[in-house]
Image (cartoon, rainbow, N blue to C red; front, top):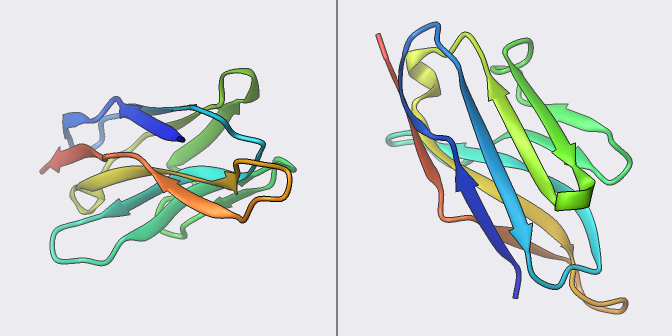
Length: 121
């Protein structure tokens, strides 16, 4: 069983910063990608940022230059530093892990429970 535990969400004024953390635990044979999605009020869940096993980073256009994704492979943990936050960043942020649990297992996506980020104007 793979579990993802998020922390760091909260309420912040526009222009402020938050740092989200996501720690993965359980049996994981290989991690392909790890990162963050978000779902704002009345919107679909969308990719915010992800990092591949190779270290390749992918950011949504709306957060480039403001958000920074980093990882600690030894702890199977990723961090999302969010600066210059805007009201439109308000959403539930979900940690995501894409990987396999065994050598010949199938690729699966695993999700955290989500952490609320609210940015006031």
